[in-house]
Image (cartoon, rainbow, N blue to C red; front, side):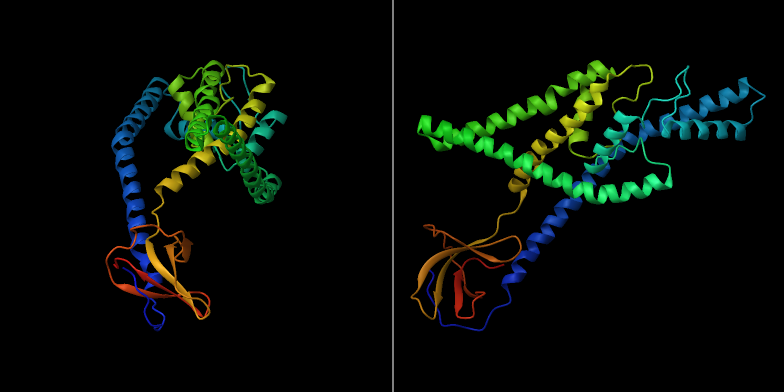
Length: 332
């Protein structure tokens, strides 16, 4: 049982309680990065070596077949082809440009900039455009976050409205909330991750797995740039295609942000709970439960039965000068 004790000097041990949790979180984060590093290294490094060796073989075969072309000239040609591709020019067949900087292409580039996707396949080359891009992103990125937050809030309100309606009809709020949340998750998966790849399969000629990979990499704003829509010079794309994909990106990012927020709330380490007695110079002792928040501050909670484990009693200084909190719990 927790018993009140006489006021003592403030104890500075409370802020140090968050240190072990922070260290464990950083270790888990580094371990997860190490896991990704090892897996990608094992899976991708052999393919990268094979690709490099194959390119060198083809290069030397070309030099042997065309003796009038020397190595430096071929390297210069390759650099020119790469630079032309990055600028949006195509040297295959009679196609010279994919219209990246036309009106539709410029709109798609603006969307990829403010959403921080940044595929990397297109970038401004003039100094004026680069300077404008800096200020455009400086204002556009916060504006995009505000829009995503508002859209996510509207989606959340819709889920809560459905939960209240179902709860009133079934007289079971818990079941209604579970059903509304599951419906929102499944409908979002269907609208933003499962159905759009079918459109990409038809318009881009990708497989469904490749299209699903592009959809997730885009909505998560990773944006590697290995798969980008509208990049095949042998295909003709309608005007509505990139505009529709831009709207899909906006609403899909809002939905995925809600899902990631839910995952974060599940992964965050809960604060320690203590059963405490709150007392001040003007009140009698009142049982109250306090919870240490992730930032190290004490937050009041409702008392729970049987939540006072055996352990030493500590005195925590309350932000008010005349108030202290006496807690019992297992100290570390």
